Length: 520
Image 1 (cartoon, rainbow, N blue to C red):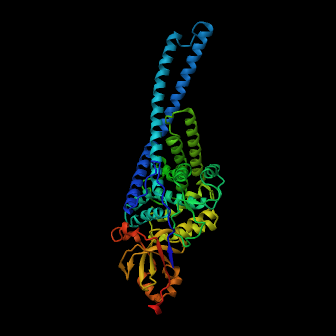
Image 2: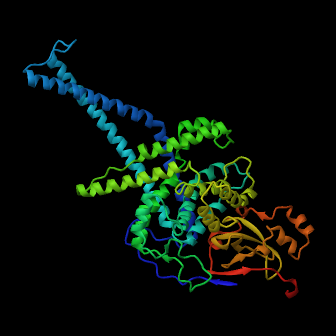
Image 3: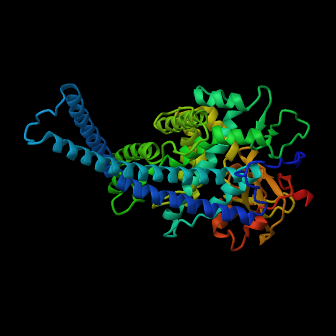
């Protein structure tokens, strides 16, 4: 079976400066991922300083505001008395009300100056954090545009993870995880949006403004499809539509995904972790940690970022901007609050990618690479146990398939009957159990081409039925594979399989069916 790509329409030219051109070279995607990780790390470092300082800063802010009000109340009382009576009041313990009044004015002036300096500093820091987060969000959305880019982005992160035995695995995976979760959340939302009506007022209002009824537009409009003549396929978004979708809908979702665990970098969270933040926590510790993360993440969003203070050319422009920012901030807070609720239409957008990422980018001590193949089954069980929304989990599972991007499989090649190595290379398989792969060996020798193969279930030796029905004896499988019918593709990434060669594809997919010994 041969699946040709759908003819692509000419891409629009972006008029907006913040929409950068999608990188055309795979090496650019790897560079972008490293840049995102570094930018997120800078955001985390700033958050660590915020969590250290903000309790005292806001305590001092409250004290100064109280002082200024107290001084002002006393001054107004004395001035009012003098205006009414024609003389200063007698003040207990003060030989001269006039001199006391002068001291009050001086104290109010000093407190006012201190209050303004603190408010200006906090405002400046909030603005800087807002810009830092907003820029990271822009950079991610500039890149994540289309199935091919999403596949390369998520696959590159998965293939770049250290092996289970490497000491840096915990640290590296922890730094990649928020970015990985965010990309999955965008892709999941894009799938759910096209088949689900939301109850959330903000989402319904903004989506109705952006997308005309009866027309299907998608970020993933470059997906390869079987039937080129099917008019129900999503259309590429025009530039203006994509900009509105990014700014009003995707941005707040991205920010919520990036910040959902920022509270784990607070001193209170570090106290729970102790000397080893990657150790297994008991139930009491885990519940306490989750409560801290929730509370501190919301503090960071409300007090550490809030709504930026910027100059405007008119009062009307300021009112419109502040109103929109308030609505977005409220929407982000709703997403974060919903993470604690099962089957929530907002929370599941992030909870499902979080569960998936906990397997693919595990920070657990006793991690076995084979566990990544359990992620699909864990989500399926969560759907069956009513933990997640069925439509969300089904959409997600259909998107990622049973075999994660970047995972390694053993495949019986249809043309030769040889068992070859393959790496999952694309999202959106037609059948979740038949992944889209690059077969990277030929007669068991390293070989790369631009061809992608749909690996039939019958040719994938992961499945016991496939092994039994193959032309190999079961003893052969037992002796050669020792019950491990998948392999860790990160071991060959870049040193044997260069990214720039692996991600090239010719937009045609061959179907790797069953080997027939009689025709060989």
